[in-house]
Image (cartoon, rainbow, N blue to C red; front, side, top):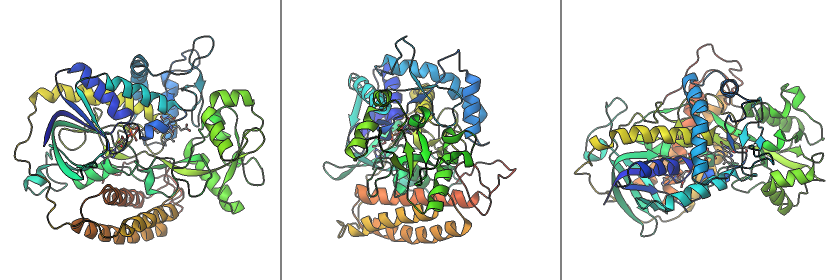
Length: 532
Ligand code: FAD
Ligand code: SIN
């Protein structure tokens, strides 16, 4: 059993930023970061386009960034949160630069700014097309310089510890559910350990792996959301899954390689397989309309032409500039046999970002006491029905700071919980055949991709729910009798994430932002968050 003042689950931008801040404020307190994979294997590492932040005050303003975020969010953003994130953003970005992250500059010393869908001006700061890798590098180096931070890799958090584990009945109606720490599967010795904490932060990232085709790495399995749901905490707006319009079309490759929207910002044009430019049929903002609109337009063109991809045409762009801004994309395309100077890039939409998640207040506090959530696993009110491109790294930085402020203001009044039992593995045996897990995962991805994708209908959602019920039942039965493994836990968590997406989608009797149901093609006048 271990005890730590501050427990952080996840080593992406959200978890690392928070841990650094806490460590600086409290050099004498213990901070433990846990991650289930290598320390840098996170969604953060794969971020390409950059961070949306107002810095060019000649051409940009807080008002414009707020307005763009609200338009993308399609009426569902919390305006107070949007204003807060946009206006606090520049200070948070300065901090990350002080910690060592480098962003590209023009010869005049100003930031080189990119533009992405839904942005009215160039405002995205970036490091080539590998912004996330640079941020992750800088944060990890800063973390390793802090003696009071312990970063533990290859440990899988299985469940939050609450009153439920002390023998009390906990339901959604229970007031003051509290988090005392977590049970963790140590992947090195295969033992389940107990970690008690005064304050816990979930920074577990997204759930893109619930779909067959996703830009998210394999760690993105909705673990945080599923854990909070099991602990009877509040989850909201899970139906708003953002499909990125342009992932490189390479069937069977997981994750799909992203072709950043900044390529369209620099002039890349979408064409169907007949090489026809088509975006003018769908939106006057053409290829730089918000993502929900571009992804639906591509989906429609693919259906009309009967193909699984469209093209991104960069042949007219200055190749030297292309290679300078997008070296990673250029190299990856070359490795895939595509010379962007002479050939168009085959692209298709892929699940990319979860706009909903664990419901938090403006300080990142969840509905469970002493439990915070930050980054992609959280639903703060910023994104509404559709996230504006490059707003998520910004949100993670701003909310990591807010979680830090709130948690540190309370820490001295908190105690470790006593009498928390050890993990009870009685009645479980080693798994007999992994096929039961791998096949169910395939089925889950198939169901979600075929019935709960970019375009939805009531009938598809009903079908999806019936099939998920069966998968849920079978997986719970397996879980009860099988020794815990990361594969089994991830399957279980992904089924929960899928269930929450379908449930949210079924409750939403309208089409708004990323949720498009042909049975309710219009927006409802009732603007509501769906809380599960
Ligand atoms: P992550 O960075 O995903 O980190 C999650 C961490 O939680 C990992 O360390 C993981 O191992 C750990 N974890 C999860 N479950 C468990 C468990 N059960 N036990 C232990 N550890 C666990 N956003 C932008 O703003 N700009 C961009 O340019 C941009 N580009 C993107 C490009 C790609 C290809 C992708 C996939 C996303 C992009 N995004 C971008 C989105 C953005 O990168 C993510 O939303 C953000 O990085 C999430 O950060 P996070 O800290 O919340 O989670
Ligand atoms: C991209 O670079 O296109 C992704 C940006 C984002 O998801 O915010």
